[in-house]
Image 1 (tube, rainbow, N blue to C red):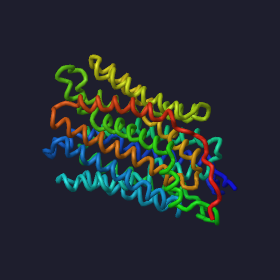
Image 2 (spheres, rainbow, N blue to C red):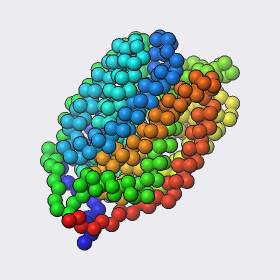
Image 3 (cartoon, rainbow, N blue to C red):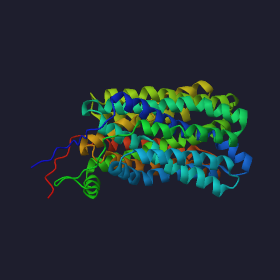
Image 4 (spheres, one colour):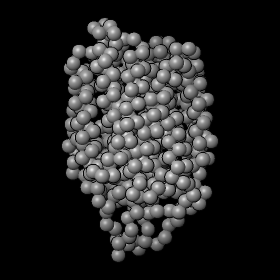
Length: 413
């Protein structure tokens, strides 16, 4: 006898409450981290570090985020998301304080890599989408995920000028301390997302966490989504961390792109157009096959990167590139998570989203670190741009065979 594929729990949050406070949580957590690339040159210059040091910190941050996310997700699925989100907000603040006060590379890497990496497992999409999945009707789920992702995108747009302003007026170290104060707002936000009636229950015939993991890892579509998500992480984190220094380096050939305002405006445009892209993905994802949309996003990124690196560089070409990449930036998030929910249901959505997200963060680690490593070795980012283009084509192809149908389960005894 088949089991229902969708697990729906009666909880206490309204759709509006989930969207407003879930969106604000993601706005803060994603917005702050989006501006870390602005700190690259000020921090490395002030401390006499190579770019590889800063790149390693951000790479480790993404790796920790991805590696621990399935564990954080399983805990949130089992015990509820409230305590997880509170701990994440506190860790986020401590990590930013550590980054601001560190003058040694090891301390900086622990604060920015370990602490903030752990914090992001508890305050970003996977945990918020778990809350959303339990409180939003299935027919509105993709749309709601798109709205939440758009909120995170708006945070990226909002925080770029804020962070650049803090750096300009107070210096990079003090700017990080101000951001730590802002990060504490995630703690009261977590209370607004408390699911009062959340109770984990396991009846005879229902999946255990172990069975859910085995089922997901044995599913071909899940594996393909996981591989594609690696590419997403590689591309977006490489650009977020290294676009500003890339423009500064090329200012010798194209002087107009070297002004800090060009990099700041470009990163802000990524965040702004990401709002439209993620909302569009959530809206269209309810009507068209999500695997085709994912393939289109990845191939679109490769085209945008190719044109950006081949055509003459100017502020306008940089802004157009940022707008195009922004529209395609995190539009993969609602689509990928919606496919996971569609295939496996929402009982273990936080954990399974975290598992596929681990691949995203492996890609993020590679994009952040290899950008710094190859620059220090060759004096250029050209090789990493080429890798990003090839990976985009690869991801476009492997998403095409993904099957979006709910799997058929037999009763477990």
